[in-house]
Length: 128
Image (cartoon, rainbow, N blue to C red):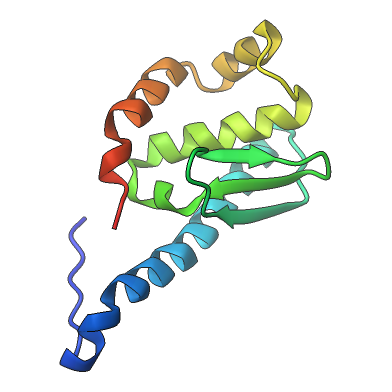
């Protein structure tokens, strides 16, 4: 999908901030919708979805059931975003990266290895 934005000259200097705010709003909406979809489909329960600015993590979750997803993932292909969401939802059941965790993740998202590779190889594309 190609999106065109037209900014008046007086807004060009703050264009980066405008784009970041737009992406964050879009990310919160889309990630919340996707998290509810997978939660309903696979029986996960979370408290809140929050958007993260983390520099070194794509996602995380808390013991209170809050899920944090890096907003830049909204620029990734949908299946990559889904991988990170599902990864964090599985952590609500299994809060570590044990064999049981990876087995559970693979049942829901069989292509997780390819998704991890995509993130490793393409993280530099998810910047403004």
